[in-house]
Length: 156
Image (cartoon, rainbow, N blue to C red):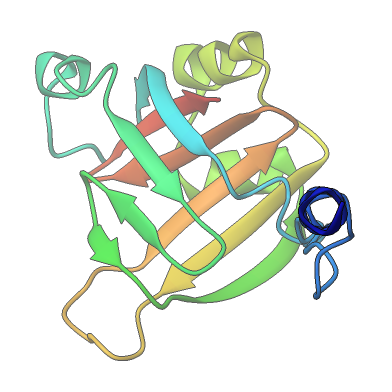
């Protein structure tokens, strides 16, 4: 009888709640939810000041730009594990003039789904001054980052 009672008590301890409450996954910061993704280069446009060829830019299709809550990794700018970021709202017309995107290049970006509202993020690596900042423009589920006069159109 005593051993039966002991077996019953041991069996009941498996049904008790844990000593510490379960940790719930942290909600993503809504201020950066639009930013934190693995973005894939799906297309590109060449700015008027491009220093690379269309073929060179085409070779980057399929590559990824990964942005996490703490850092970034890009084939164009390198990686940073502890990035600082600045966010500002922009107008696509102003950005296209600033980047020297006109005519077919501007139309391609628009047909890709890029336009207003638009947010610019500037990610920098304060601890590694040689790491190039990553500037990414986000419009819904589309994004664009430019390097050497080629603007890569990204999606996640």
